[in-house]
Amino acid sequence: MFGKAPLKIFSCRSSRLLAEKIANSLGVELGKSSVTCFSDGEFQPCFDESVRGDMVFIIQSTNPPAENMFELLLMIDAAKRASAYKVIAVIPYYGFARQDRKDRPRVSIGSKLSADLLSTAGVDRVITMDLHADQIQGFFNVPVDHLFGSAIFAPYIEKLNLKNLTVSAPDMGGSKRANAYSRYLQSEMVLCYKLRKKPNVVEEMSIIGDVEGKNVVIIDDMVDTASTLVLAANMMKDRGAESIRAFATHPILSGNAVERINDSALEELVVSDSVPFTNTSKKIKILSMADIFATTIQAVTTNQSISTNFVF
Image (tube, rainbow, N blue to C red; front, side, top):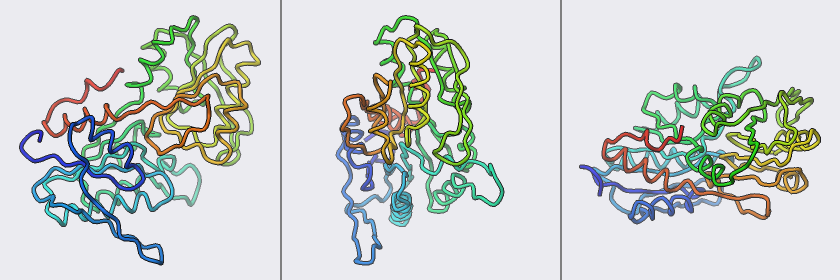
């Protein structure tokens, strides 16, 4: 128990493995819950123990399918109706975050709608990591603790002791994140500029900066099809880069992404365990974020600062 209200950790089905790691790090048992499934695909989550007066943390990434988000919403609603003191959603990967604005006519802003749904369900706080866009925090009317993958990636990069280190972003949207790494690691920085005609298809890419003889680390918040990442890595290798590694917090890795990575110039892709992923590639390394989330949960429960979790 931390603080005045008892702490209880629960998990939805998609993020159970990470939830177990977080509970172990906190030294508590994962709360008991179950899901009743009907033949037509409908499901009903249930808490199998009392949560009355408890501070309830529900862990679930909201990557597709949409059932992951809906299961989290149902769990939040169930906790509120069971008289939980506070309900905090721990969302390691906040799905639909690429829909953070109207970038063309007649489209939805999916990340705002997701935030509204969570608020309507009754969430009191959200803890997440490496949002696709920082402004998504403003879509919520409850506190949002936004953690950063740099807490696990920056120490790993430092241990590599790479000479002529250069940090890169795979596109202009990631320049702020790459610049933060560059300043912390006191390294040079290059950027990639890409043009898209449609989602997941890169029409053209160019590299801004010199990579010849450099050990490059590409920083991104997520890797989906890996098309952009692989194209950037191969171009850098052609321009004389000594080595290319990539660090992406959320390993979506859809379609033939793993095969693309295996066949690319990348020496290594380092990801977190924010999304369930069975690793079948020698090039991919998974670092756990469980301790970071555990420390943050304890700090939130005891009303302590979480800024010590930020490397930069």
